[in-house]
Image (cartoon, rainbow, N blue to C red; front, side, top):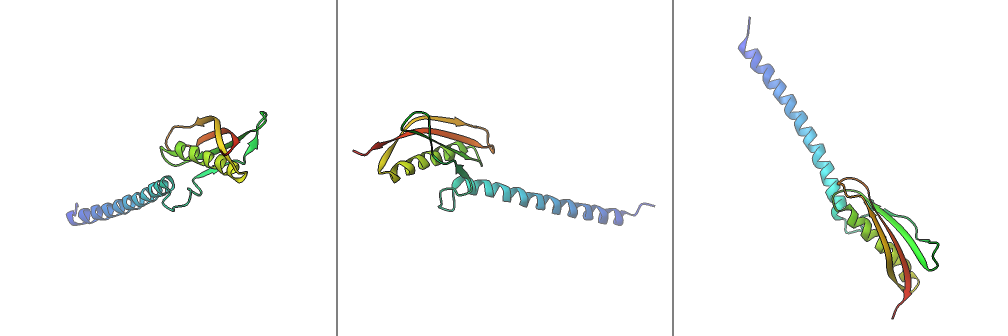
Length: 129
């Protein structure tokens, strides 16, 4: 026959297991979100190490014009991090030569959240005045 107390005990056991699974999943989701936010906001104070990367500066076919590309992932504003990283690389390249950067063209790709966003910058180095 039907035993009401064993039914209640079984239901409690299933609820407990479901609750543990839900909590475990919730912790993983929270950890993933925290990592994306950490990467996106640059909490370390370092220039988003590991969140954005760039190519080496290369000379283009036009004399005196150089190109650098950068990419970033993690959130809606990844394009801004890619843009800033590319500009920073261009700025550093010119400053190492005692000059200032002048951006002539930029191409940006990627707008969806959690996808890779790219920025390609063509620039020239000009003497400081």
